[in-house]
Image 1 (cartoon, rainbow, N blue to C red):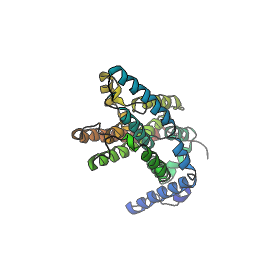
Image 2: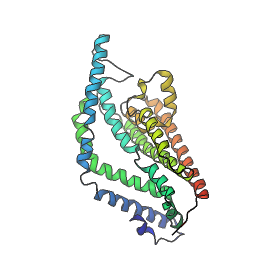
Image 3: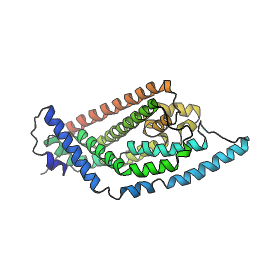
Length: 292
């Protein structure tokens, strides 16, 4: 296991030794995940099947609106039919980056069952360790899922009516995905840290997942919300988990507004990093463990 690989590392070490430690954790975690991802490609491909239902549903919606308004190309919230299909495909990518299944509940369980003490007696930081293992998880995921994703996007290329975006948009899209991953990690890790104060966080996690599903844009583009509600939802960090990267790729965010939007996303990331770190430090101070 990972801890057996690093147990012999001394308590005090320099930058070079620390970087070597992080490389060991990342490579070990990546190797472990690739071992059991052999059949993951087919499973990833099957995940796209529900979007067929979404295509038929939105086709009926846009067709009925077009007939009612006497238009050939109806639009809802700035999205036409083909764009809405492309949007759902892109949100599957952004959600694959930002989703952190089992992270918060896993942290709370380790606190509750006393396993957290191994991070206190060995030369490893809990948050850094979990971040590296999640990076390894995502690398393994996309190493196996790249071909299924490429196949689906190739078959659905006609839905991307605007074509391939400019290099600047591609860079902004990639940056939003990376920061979306980090926001998702530190946000859920902060929820898991609540386990230092409460024995069970499943109810809080359920509430978070419920709000995240609706407010991240995973269910529908946030631009479809009424103006007053949309302004409030856009103030929250949830949109960076799904809606924002897809909107960037599709050109729904004006290029002159992109730097400010990315700066706001970076500010939310810094906020959750601080919250997570402060919660961990204060939680450790009040933590008590007994037994061998």
